[in-house]
Length: 327
Image (cartoon, rainbow, N blue to C red; front, side, top):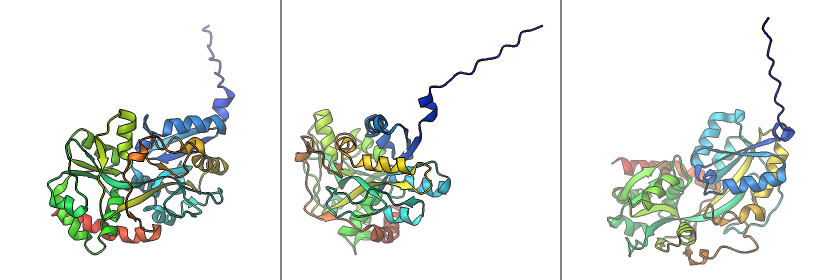
């Protein structure tokens, strides 16, 4: 008679079986090996007794689109990577709930008292260029449009920088935005889905300028020892972006989600932001900003629409952009 072989069950370590999982949807560059994600994951897991899992879901606006599709069935506990231009639309979905952090002091250019969305970094949109290739950059949208300079921008339907550019033009030229876009159309080399693809085209020399942030040159200076990149200062001013996170109402780990949001504005998280996400932290670490950030341009005028107003203006601004680029 043949012997029956019975495989003994393999016992998993108790920690592997029992750790609660916190799922955070975010944008691609946050989870990259050079982004904040890996450091944040290690630091939070050292204190939370949990398994923190980041899920990359495209660029910022794509996060919101994915959540709308998934609805209350989403696996996300937290979404990190929306911004002030998407907050109203996100709140209208009914998928998010208020945090439990209470009042906090933030180092932001605007007063912050939103009960649902927690800021973690901020910056100004700008066109970045290489000083060795473009010694005299344009100083306004009109000057850019009048030149033969090529630019790469991001799709406003998928990307928060892309949407930010639409609102930047609209805020700078409330009654002339359509005219400005018509003049800029022949400068646009291509429109990419997100920031990562656009910046790669710029660094590969495919375009003269790329839509990014006033802080982007700090990466080249600090990480690469390269001072050839700069952000063009525009006389119209620069549009402010504040990036935010919020927890889902459907989360089955509400306490852990609030612990993460509190961690997000702690020194441990915030000190990672300047040299991984290359933005200004929402709460400046005690040691201040890294050397090199003092070389960045400071806009003379900050432009921003309140969250509700940005949502109302978005469709008109998008239509103007689409019309100009389709001609």
